[in-house]
Image 1: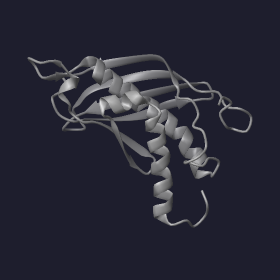
Image 2: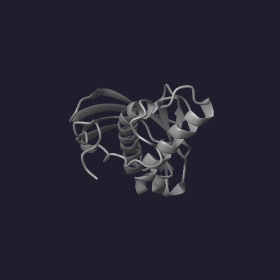
Image 3: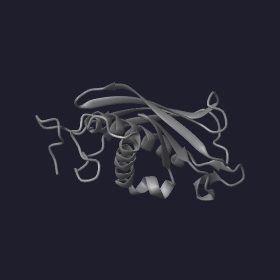
Image 4: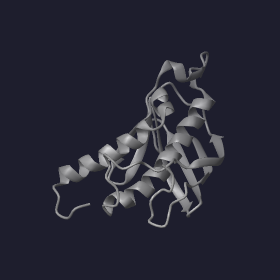
Length: 171
């Protein structure tokens, strides 16, 4: 990042990079997930859509849609955390530089705490540990009240390799 740039220029650069990151995963678009960014903090939003209902009698969100939402949130958080440091250091250009590969899921365990209701859902992921090759993430999802989670998950991910310059080694 160049010193003393106007706030709007910095914000636009960050938003452009996040949009490119989200655009690399077509399934995010299929689910309708959007990401709300406030500084470096991300909140994923899963807008309610009838196609996401798993049990029409209960009008409950499908467990697979819920798990996918949590996993996508985790992967985006991990990717964003590594991109954020490079973006702020001016190492990458958000519009032209190739994005590194996404982390690969090793395992992902979901706790379904209550039925997901037919309304928008929100999720935030917290990185517990992130090393050169491995990362552990905890993610929580809620709907109307942040203190009443309807699902949470813990995931372990294989991080993409980097070359000696700090950039991704694959094209």
